[in-house]
Structures are given as structure tokens and as C-alpha cells.
Image 1 (spheres, rainbow, N blue to C red):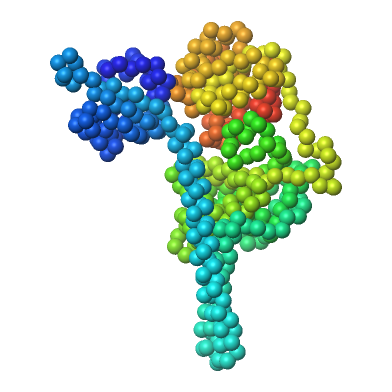
Image 2 (cartoon, helix red, strand yellow; image 1 turned 90 degrees about the horizontal axis):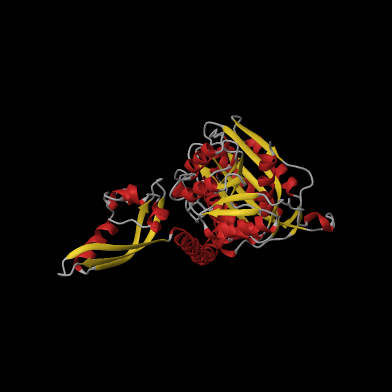
Length: 475
């Protein structure tokens, strides 16, 4: 078996490590039906094309687009199989997002039509119930009619939620202070939530304004708080935070839903059970719920997302099983007569002074925008697209590189291993860990003393430059 440089970058195994081993044992956890089909096709037809689920050296699952060709010797006998695999993991992720959006749109159209018909069915029922309650005054009839009325109203409320999701949630738009919105929610949940749930909030001064429907946005925050409560059956900490956030072009390149400009972020965090990775992708789907039968309709988060999108915003979610979940609601900020024109301007960004920075990032678009930003603001840049290359580049330029920006999910050699190797070369080098999978607080709990700072993806030019400036300024 031969193993080229492309395979080394994709899977993390070096040619020396791979040579002499069964390739299947390196890149597959088990023999999947698609792999069996590929082997059968190569025997019968001499070729195969398709997608396969594989794993890298560090256990990361990837999707590859494979083209297999049977190679024969001079006598026409099978000699080997030429395999050309292309990593399409990110491509499949973007396709999945597009299909999910299309599915949501189709479900919304269908749900809207069904809800309209159900409203037409429920309206005469609810009107007749009022007439019947006036006609039959005895206690038993009143009790039975009240049960019917209550359940008809529940059905009507459910239809309203469906319509809210299907129609994109139109509503009034007025200037709002998010502080009032969150404070109102806090007062409500303090009265009704169990005492074993501690409620914390962090609301700084000088927050920007938003334009929105107060009732709808209150519904969003309340829904997230209720979900947080349900995730902590034995108690825990529920945190609500608000912050100003300026999205720039760097951030937009890393989040397709964002647009450049000022936002308000409302974060709702819990210390509960967390959401399994496979479930996270479905939590915003209508009628999907992990709650027990009868305790959830599966419309809460889909309606919340529809409301936020109708306000021009988006929602990010981060969760770790057994550690908790954080929902971040991004709402566009607006200028009003209460804000001075200069309040939402681009902040002064910290300039570099010719220092050399090593950027280790395997995602090309992120690497390019990061390098362009650093060069624009006065830094020199070395770039690496895998961990082993990062270590080699640092070893060659250790006297000039002032800081290392290391993505934690790197091919060939993962972030942790690369950081340890670089630290052995120079224990004093400033290392900034970068990740889109974990939060800063969670990363701090790992106790990795080799890391001087943490940068959460997606990041802005401001946060990138500030983090690097602070790291290299520490003596």
C-alpha cells in the first residue's frame, strides 16, 4: 500500500505509520454497507464512485467522496486498487444546512395550510360551546362542557404556534431596551421556577437598542428559560446575559446567517444534562421534542427561531452532554433618538508592530480571512494547514514568531499534541487556542497550562486582534 501526502493531511497517519497496515483498519470503525457495496462493485465492474464515512487518526469522523479503479498487471490480472478520496465534510455540512432550510420551508407551508383548516373546524366548535353552556346549566353538563372548552382552547393555542412558525411571525416593531425584556422574564421565572435552580444575570450598562415585538421576544427568552429548567431536574444554575456585539466581515465569513453590523446577544445558559450531538441538529425542527409524551409539542424552539429570524437575527447553540447548554440569540441593534450616531461605529482596532504570528488552521476560508486581517493590521504571518506543519514551521522560525494561533481540530496532528510539541521547543511561546466546538469556560476547566488565551469561533477582527495583543503583551 502507498500513502501520499494528501492522505497524510486528510487522515493524520504518516506514510511510515500507514505502510504495511490494512487501510480499512486505519480509516473505518466497522465495515459499513457502503464499503461492502464498494468492494463488490470494484470486483464486478472494476470501478466504483460514491461517498463513505471514515475516521481520522484522532477519531474525527469525515465524509469522503471516493473514486476507486481496479489496476491490472500486464497479463490483465488484478494488481491493486487506485483510490482517490476527497474530504467533503464541510461541503456536506453546508448541503445539510441548505436541505434543512428547504425542509423547514416546506413544513412551514404544509403546517400553515393545515392550521388554516383546523381553525375553520375549531371556530364553530368554540362558538357552539358558548351556546351550549348557556343552555345546559346543570353541574354535570357545565363540567363536561368546560373540559371541552379547555381542550378546544389548547388546540387553538397550538394552531397559533403553528401559524407563527409557518408565516414567519409578523408583528409590531418598536424600539426596545433588552434590559427590560430580560428583567421581566427574570421576575416571572423567579416566582415559578423551583428553588433548587439558582438564577443569575449579567446585564452591563450602555446596551444598544433593538427594534422588535416585545411579546414575541419575551416568548423566545421565556421558552429558552423553560427548556433550561427542564434540563436541570435536580437543580442547577440558569444564567441570562446580555452584551453588545459588532459583527464584522471576518465573522460573516464564519457564519452564513450573520450580516455585518451591530447586534445584541441574549445568552441563556444552564448547567443541566446537555444535548447529544446527533440531537442538536434537530432541535429547531417543528414537532421534534425529547420531552416525555404530553410534556412538549416540539414547537417551542422552531417558533423561537422563526421569531428571531423575522427580526433579522439568528441563534447559536452550544451543548456538552452532562455539562449544560448555552443558547445565544443575536438580534440586530438599531440607532434611535436615544442613541448618539457614533455609538455603533467600528471600534479602534489594536495594531500590530511587525510581530510574526503562526496561524494553524485547516479550514481554508477561515485561514485566508484571518491571515488577511492580521496582515492588514500590522502583523507578519506564517500559515499551516495541519498540526505537523505548524510544529515544523515553528521549529524553523522560533526566534521570530511571537504567538501561535492554533485550531484545536487539526489534521495529521491535533491541536493539543501540536501545542505540546511547540511548548517543548519553547516553553515561553504564547499560544492561543481556537475552537468552534467548546466555550471559553469549558476550555478553562481542562487546565492546560501551555495555553495563554482562548478564541471562540466564529470570531471578529476585533476579538482576534485583542486576543493576540493581550497574549503577546504579557511578560
